[in-house]
Image (cartoon, rainbow, N blue to C red; front, side):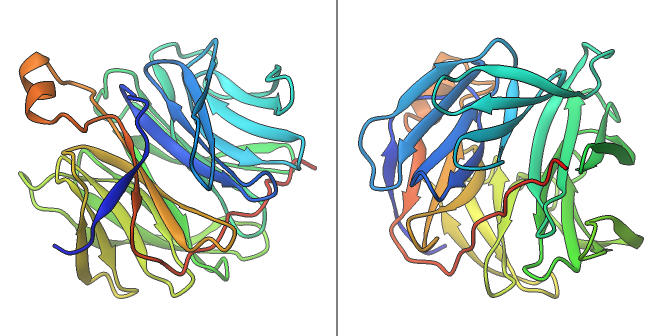
Length: 292
């Protein structure tokens, strides 16, 4: 493995997840899902601001300079950036208290793909949804731990994973609507015992950067699914990368302490912090989500 990191934020998260840049504000937002917290920090580092949330939430999408769309355990919420006020925009499995939101990302056309999973990671309890211009549609069911949602720069393909199976899939998508086309194909697999695929981003060159939960690294995949390199992260449970900086040329990575007892915390003292790769990358920002 190659590559080094520094600490972007030393605020410890039980389950750091969903890092997403807000380019106009020059800030990174991310979640502590289990702690019901939203965190934010300027790209240039500094103080981490922590906002308590009334629900478990996991995904932030930009609406405009003043509003965000937050995916949570029972719905999609509009969040006023200045006040932090939440207002329910659309229900999401609100009738199923056993599930919560997990991974999600905005397609180049402005559609949001958002996944759900069981709060205890129950087998097959989750699903993958498409949300675009007010319409919410289920795309795939029977997923245990949805992760790795990412899109090609031209919007012609999507990737997603079931961490429990160790599989990342690729599927063609309509660039205009973000809807899947045809059948999904296995893109990459992680052998049992080597961790599982967690969150992903795709860079400007079409390389997929995937956080390997339990493997302590980011794996970089070529367009044909070959793993071409791995970048070490100094904790066992990296959860999701995000491009940050004015030019999207830096990468932050969230991590987690979920499932750790005192002995595990002692053995993995950096767990739960958010890291910054010291190398530069060719990243790109997600577009705003289209609500109407």
